[in-house]
Image (cartoon, rainbow, N blue to C red; front, side):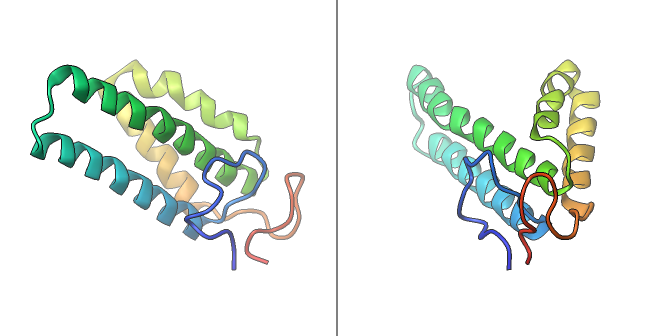
Length: 125
């Protein structure tokens, strides 16, 4: 069946299939959207708003990297490749955004290796 999309978000040792990756990212983005909406709705002071965003953004970024690394391991690639997108993502808003979108599409569409690979057993098996 695969890894449940609500589990192992911070694991750096497992493989994650496409379906689990997509649903986990949707939930992660939904949580961040809910935090931003709550900050806007309750009109939080500027200093407190930045502190709350920082408290939520750091785990969001680590979790996003972890999910991408898990997906790359499922494709029999090293999870360290996910770190290459940090300088590309902050380089230019248009190029970085397009490259990040392309990376997300590749991770969501390209199937993982069937069976056991060098990073562990097949998450679907």
